[in-house]
Image (cartoon, rainbow, N blue to C red; front, side):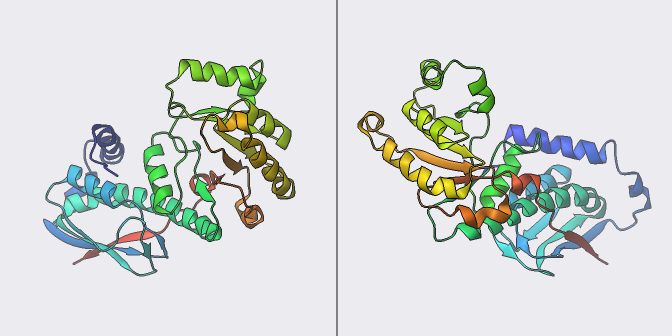
Length: 288
């Protein structure tokens, strides 16, 4: 992923201004002009943030030299050295907290995601993220989710239409809702309909949805229900559109994920990687 873009540049500028402001007051105490340092992992996990961290270093001081021993999406272990740094001491100190914070946060997301993805191995089910992200950090958090082996759901309201419970409450019927979206959107628009039970999911298929999202449905009900939904999607009227129905399941406690390894599910979406993951602990050590 390219993190050298005007949009991301502005975000990183904000991070730097938020922390450094008009300058680090502690700099007056620094006597060493040039310093050397390295990062070490204090626990194991999946790394994320190499290119973002590079951009932070470049913006704070182009004289900062760095050498990474880890790649995004790669597993690391406790006490493993992650990168070496050298350059102006004041610049290394200025970059420390900003770069560590984003790396620890994103690596926590990647690690949490990888733990869940490992449960899905051997199935045809992908783990997808949601729009429950930190404002201003969505592009980074979703990238971290991918580094952990997940797949990205829609980035925002603009790249897929999802008719959720509250939309359904304010529309006359699903078929008309789908037709209105098709009429006013690009022909490539993907339409997802959230269903709270199998009957509502059947209505969604008959209304022309590209995907259905089965929310908070008991796994025992899903096993039989998904077979019915697949059979319905194979009928002539749906097949005329030349599309394969995508079945997504959500509202699952991560601890119950194994109960949902059900044939016929394409996606399991979760916000837990971003909303419930813990930061991974990294430390910058200075060499005298």
